[in-house]
Length: 343
Image (cartoon, rainbow, N blue to C red):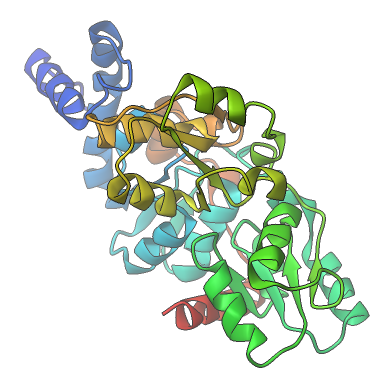
């Protein structure tokens, strides 16, 4: 497909738009903005021609979030917005399990993942067959899976949860069940068990999966940063270790972190999670000061503007997400249970 070339006036207008969106606040200089503007202009034009929508996770590159995304958010928000999308094509700027979730909720739409290697260490820590084996070992227990899982894992579970709604949903399940299975995030499971006063093994069966980003954070640096930045509010994702969660000011999902920043005045904030959230925070809250403490997710950062444009123009077969219908139906049932229990 031939893409129209932007005029000098088009590029200048696009640079101005990117500046207004906040890319300059994220450290992008004028030369880089001009280079990016040529790509974002073409992609946004292609979206209209292809009747496509681009959801982007908050860990994506700033030029994707601010330059081409139609909506952004954490896994829960993207799940809901993808279900409401009216476009015929979804080009998902995230990782594979997110694109699969979009396909599960939108079977009639073409869902494309621009980088086929954009997986997830946590999602890849368990398979649907392993879930079924776990359920055979613990018959009768409700199986709850974190949304960071593949379609076949969701299909083998009763309900999906996100970091934002996991506690609420587990509380409701414990009203009827004395024991349940939570997978695959071991650290999140430990944090939930502590918060809900449940004993691991007796009341909560957990898996041993971990996120390659969040498992690397520890507590050694906390006291030093509190000394260097008096009054700093330290926020950590619930995929971090319980020992870290115990010493920070707040632990929650990515959306929860932004709500905390909005409602809790502080001289400094530190977001202990993937670096993309910090980049977005600096553009979203230009009057607030953020102390860097993050790790890059190699899977999220596998997607760039060039790959998005090529996928829009001529997607390869391996970029088109397919979920077998029997798996899709079961996985959707688990996702629908999430929406019902989290309402």
